[in-house]
Image (cartoon, rainbow, N blue to C red; front, side, top):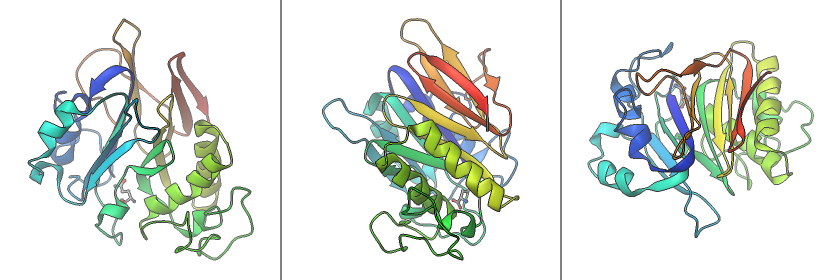
Length: 258
Ligand code: GLN
């Protein structure tokens, strides 16, 4: 199970998700506290952030353990944004360890991360077809090699390729996640589908089989943190119930059942 975290609020650096907090993603890569599946997250890591001068986010990902990238601390200290997303990965058995299998996945302004596992058959009929469609026996409807097809054979890449056509069809972030998670969860009862996504103006996350928390600070300079597990010891972290959708915008945080 991987671990992921995101921020929406006053501009901050990626260090605030990765290195600064006592239980930030760097620490969680080798000593996660609440991880239910897997013990270390050494199969890669990635991060994404928004720059006001560019319409699309900047995405940086590697397939090596986060602690082996000596260039990262300096980069994370200057990569600053009002909206950030980062993840460390523990590859599910049978999944490739490669950059294209590593979150965040991106399309237009959207960034997406997945904690969990899912049978690819359970999402194949959503890939490349915003209206859904008949089951395709595990082959993506859009074709793995076609534009918008999964960029890796990793299940998370397939989930991304199921969510992103919904972005292109104009669905709001939360609706796109809810649709894909409900569909995939219905077809694969053993699926774990904790998704975390952002578009620069809002965050959305699902809790489906693993832990999810948020922390909201309404003071000036504050914002919302959403993470697989609390990043620090401050009071105010709240657990999101399983099978829920979390929506966060500058207006607040809303959690609803899926
Ligand atoms: N199944 C995904 C992968 O292999 C996510 C793994 C995880 O959450 N540990 O990358």
